[in-house]
Structure formats: C-alpha cells, structure tokens
Length: 173
Image (cartoon, rainbow, N blue to C red; front, side, top):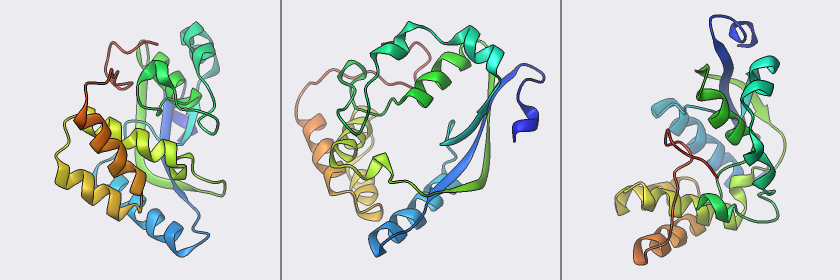
C-alpha cells in the first residue's frame, strides 16, 4: 500500500482495518464492519499512508477546529464523524489522488471511537441527512449493535438540523 504513495500524483492510500473483538458484541461488530466494507468499499479507511510533502502542502487551518471524538462531537461539521485523519483526507483529495485498497491490512487493538454512544448517535444523524431509508438505518443499528445510531437517525429525521457532509466535494469547516 505505501509503495504507491508519492508516485503518479497519489498523495494518500488507505486500506481496511477491522476492530479486534474483545467481547461477543465486539465480535458481531467486527464481522458486520468487515462485511460492510467488503460490500461497500469506503473511500477512506483507518489504515493509511500519506506522502508528507503533499500532506504539508494541502493541510489548512481547519484542522485546528477539530476536537477529540472521545470528548465531544464536532458541532461545526454537523454529525461528529470528522477526525483529524478524515480531515487530512478531505484536504489531500482537493489536489492529489487518494486511492483505497479493499483489503484488510490491520486489526485495530484500540477501542473503536464508533462504539461511543455519541458517535453512534452522530452516525445515525449522518445516515438520515444522506437520505438513507429507515429500513437500512434499522439494519445498520441491529447489525452493528449500535442502539444510539437509531436514536440519532430519528432525531435528525424529526427536525431540521444543520448538516454538512464531510465527504461532499465542497466541504469546509
């Protein structure tokens, strides 16, 4: 994966990472997560390599507005799904190619941020704002054992809350 970075205008390459199951619920989440990534490959995933000169050239001051997902969601971006790595991906893709490999290269040994209730809630808001139908939101909540995802989905659908999609081409904080 790292061999392609810095060549032919590729600034970032990412691959799949699955969480290590430390309980039955974690094992269910890991299987569901892996299946989801195989069926719908992400544009950017948790294991990545960046070409430093491109990174330094593309990073802007918006990175200073981000907060730790462990402490709070990112209100400036709508649902709390923009971490530093995702923000750097957003900056990088404006000028350079970003490639994603649909292959698992690592098992994450740390706690998944997505397991936190506020992050599940934010993912539910994100799905609602994208217009995902309720059946798919329910399926996601059940398959990942994310009860707060459904709560966030209902919250977002029931009111007019501001939302910015961080994967939209014109995204900025």
